[in-house]
Amino acid sequence: MVALSLFRRPQPQAADEGRIGIIDIGSNSVRLVVYDGQSRMPAILFNEKVMAGLGKSLSTSGAIDAAAMERTMAALSRFGAVARHMQVGTMRVVATAAVRDASNGQEMLDRIRALGLEVELLPGDMEAEMAAQGVLAGIPGAEGVVGDLGGGSLELVRIAGGVTRERISLPLGVLRLGAIRAKGPRALDNRVAKALEAAGWEGIGAGMPFYLVGGSWRALARLDMHRTHYPLPIVHQYHMAAETAATLVRTLAQLDRRRLKQVPSLSTGRIPTLQDAAALLAILARRLHSSELIVSAYGLREGLLHAALPEDVRAEDPLISGARKEGAIQGRFPEHGDILHRWIAPLFAEEGADDARLRHAACLMADVGWRAHPEFRAERGLEMALHGNWAGVDARGRALIAQALYASFGGAGSPEILGRLAEPAGLMQAFRWGLAIRLGQRLSGGAAQGLECSGVSLTETGLCLHLAQGDEPLYGEAVERRHKALASAFGKAPERAG
Image (cartoon, rainbow, N blue to C red; front, side, top):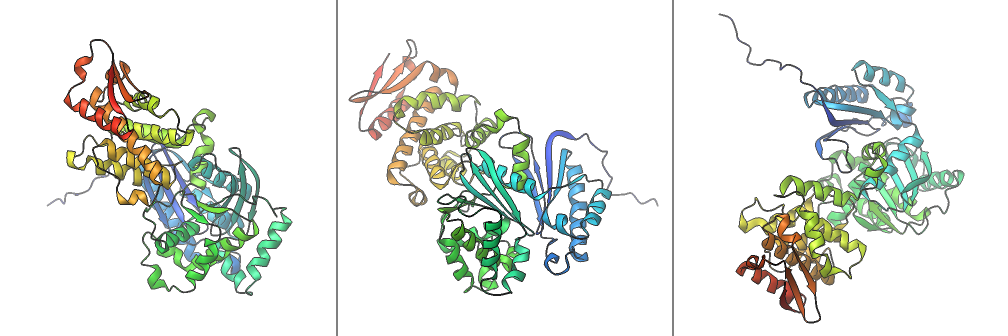
């Protein structure tokens, strides 16, 4: 009898030229991320990391130890195979401080190339530049100092006016800090002070935010979110007072591994280095005179993508770009969000630019819940705004967009969580955005034409709905109810013209 194979290797398929993969060989972790294309806000199709610890032995032996190298090679072999099966069209492989500084770093590079992966060894200044570009990609308009803490090095970059300025790379990676701190209670403080003075960095960024990049500092933010009962699980653009770093040093001194493992989303692989990361952050926040600490989930990998974009694409607002993309995927009429935004704008002419862009984002997402069960559309809008993978928006902004979508899908009042993220006046205004969206959606059926031949405006006493001649039949009972609700939210009477 001839045994039949149950598994057959499929024929190779052509690569998707738009699909981009980045393998980041860091001093602490090795990660593969696959993106759906080159755009201002590419979607992540795949994300996996291995805590290889390449830089763990550098402070003692100056070399990558055999176990870490073998673990890294196994991860890279898998990542290469995954990328081939996903038909990744463009692959970029970068190595940073551990490989750069190790005495056997060239051996590692040769072995990686033998796998068929073209690896780039990033110099320290380039690593710093890409980390800063990542922050600018995720927080446009960021001004201050970026600190990217890796396993083998610390990169510091001042950013202002949308560009990077002074930058330094220091051998103060989290895997090196333990050996420094073991030399005495002030050893790390003295090392940082001398490094900043030698680089001419004293006073740079004083009174400005310090942007935290890297897994160790994100883990500290997770701990603080747990400590303060923060209601959102989103770490990007999480704000902490500059003094919080010193508070976390004291907190960690009282917590054992068992209690740390209970912190949601805290990687157990980061626990051994948390105290060192907190100690360094407290020193930097004090010596740089930082005004506050802001976490960026965007770093080196996103910086590599961002720097490669055409200038006009880099200039796009990531929140608006991402919301427009999501609306086009999930909505019924891709152009509807922008038209809806223009339609309700006359009601909110007094708003500042910051809130106007949040309103725009809400309009772009206004149709994301239409496929959901009618009883859960409001919850769908709330969840999309609060937990979506958005950039360029903080917790308050998420709350205002969530309030607008919740109201637009018929939700009553304001969910309790929103009151913990934004002020009452802002939520009330966002509630009005939602009612205006709800009126526009009902009037037009979600299509463009009904909005393009109508309009809304405020008068001294009323909220007026303007209809083109011949479109009077659009004003049915459902439209009338929503018109009254919106007018009431403004403290006015419903009026009609046309």
